[in-house]
Length: 409
Image (cartoon, rainbow, N blue to C red; front, side):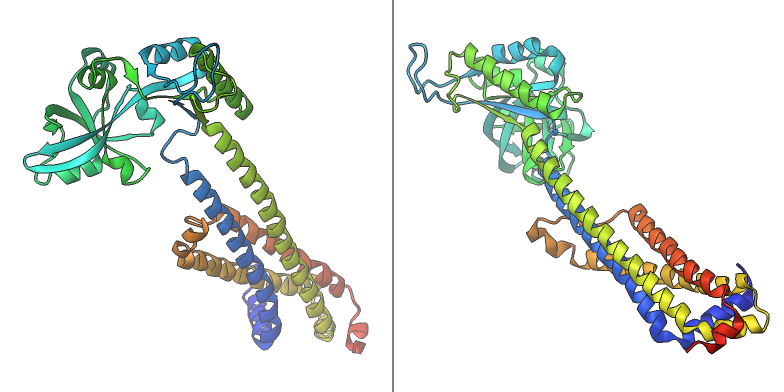
């Protein structure tokens, strides 16, 4: 393995047969290059699909109310369905073991000001569980608490960009912001992977908003996450069950699709998983086909190399070379070419993905890339294949009699 003379002969053989070595390496490099690009693009597509849910928990269900479109049980069409705290409590109690987190929402638009800086923002009044549904990351301070809910405290949690807009010379935590004429204490600053729009929102306790903006128990929306142990089909059935129960509660026709609207992310997740599974199968088939083509190419070239070197091998045997040394020369040459060419193809593939990655976003391919482990595995597969492809003909050649080899044309 570490015989200097052996490696000197291998490098001399490669340098004297540049075209042959180049063709061998090209087959391997192209196989790894194509393999890298295919899996990189597949991962980019998966990243795009996953990004659609980055802002919300993937097991979320959003419950919205609207107007009835059908008369039902003596009630006319056109009724406005209005959720209240009672519906929140009903869902929480009725489906206790199926609900992971739950919150109501109230939407408002407010004019926020601090020491002369002003701007308009969307306000969401929520329960403490809302933090987990929106994957909100607290950067400073804390989120809305149950004590805030119980005390109807005038506290708010603001997004990172709200702080940047209003607090030019200081930090927001502990300061008071005027929201449409009412002062609120900032108890937390958050970040959100959903983007700039999500970081320009203001959150406050739901009970505080109900007291100040209407003095009622109305809510605009109810959101929840279902138990993560549920399968996709169970989650879809759960969403349908909630819709059916609420329709009964508000005397809404089962055929009325506008009065109670359920958006269950399990549906989108199921569709995404189906697409990604199909894409994964296609990529694996094409990728394995590429590797197999590379293996066949290496095998054919190695057979040709051994055939071409028959006379040389005969002379070596006539001069006393052992079958083991002949096999070693061909085998290590095959492994060396396969390893170097595979690494070269890997570098080109990663470089191409890095170079064109940003331009692929318009084709719904985000941050394409391939795991190092997968690429190393593919390269090792080709190296092993190259070794086998070199070993079999080399073993056969090592057994040939010198007189027969010298007569070969």
